[in-house]
Image (cartoon, rainbow over all chains, first blue to last red; front, side):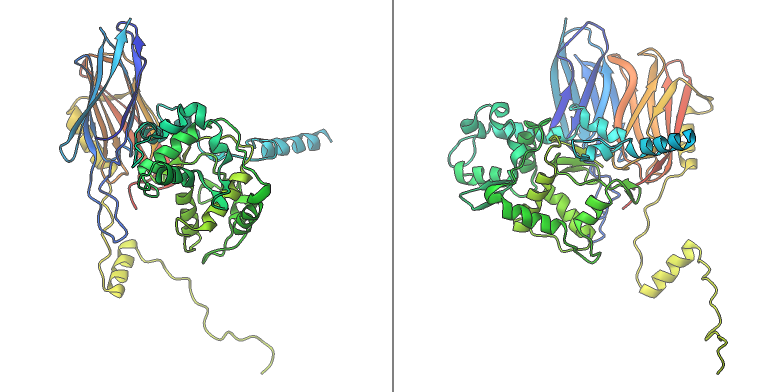
Length: 106
Length: 256
Length: 160
């Protein structure tokens, strides 16, 4: 489990776009670096990330090693009704992690 | 005559722009960073340092060690108890008879008062707790004491700052006092104030303490870095913090 | 001996720099070891090929999509990037970002869904060297739009 911070307004208006900022604590090891002995450090990144609002996709993203360590994503979502804003991501190990926050629609 | 005066004013403006005066010409590393790096620091939702702050926040309330006490168990609400604390560190510890850094104090609490194992140096947990405590002083001016029992250690720190070291035979003062504001390989040489530590350094792609930065500096001049428990590092940290007095705490800062 | 100066040796010509490949070979021969291979680099042709694989024969226009990147990068480890499309939410199918000077050319691929509030994304990317970054927007009406930024990186990120 890596630390995830999801910043979004707690209350939004129905179908009015709101901004979400996401921070994930992950080194996103590119596979391009070498250690002090000259050995290549193997790639270890989050390669897929999906965000959904109350079950509807906001976006699906394929991330590549060019995405910086501790990935930051800022994007816009809309909500038709109150529900969970969910972020689900999968890394090179095949591990999937899901985090969510509650969004309330006024 | 008017042309000369205009030229003089133009030169003065050119020299004067970008110099933020904190009373006496002190510039935070923030002022020397790019617009994008500053924007990263200014937005708590975009500042990766907050990933560590969040960890520190969780640790603050977690019971630890033989005592099963959390930091909150003794100190209570963080903001109330820790406000202003980071502005005064390093400070003199009368029991130890020497100055102690904020990391040292946290470590002391964990081992002696919580009865918990020491947090490894430069671990995410230690960085998180230090960043979380430091955050409570964000926006407040550094105010490290210079009188009393701390004086000889402050002087030792100043002497270290002014001593040439390493194969490059450079002192901290040569770059960070005399050449601050000029450029070294495309980067502006900062005045080297530790008012944002622990901070997220883009070069590290992660969070780090002042000690980590100082070890980088020493390696940079091809000097043998001091071990983490060296009194030299405490003295240097003390001098650097005192030298930054007046600048506001920016923890968790972002630097290139 | 009178006082007129006589050169002790013929003046040396400045050394002619060897081509890079030749220098590496000489160094390898001298040291008797194999230097670790330099990481392969992407190139503009590779990026063009990847873009063609997405667009097929369809024309690519400039406009609508804006790629926001600083022209002078302080540190290539984390470069703030925003890609936005001047089109209503729901009309943009996907965004693609490529870096023609990184070891690997692909940066990000994004498909927008029904709960997307706006066709834009901000993130931080790694740039190994000075290069051109390209954003390609795929609209729901089948049209393609691109924007590129040529930038200078003052510190390498991916390449050690």
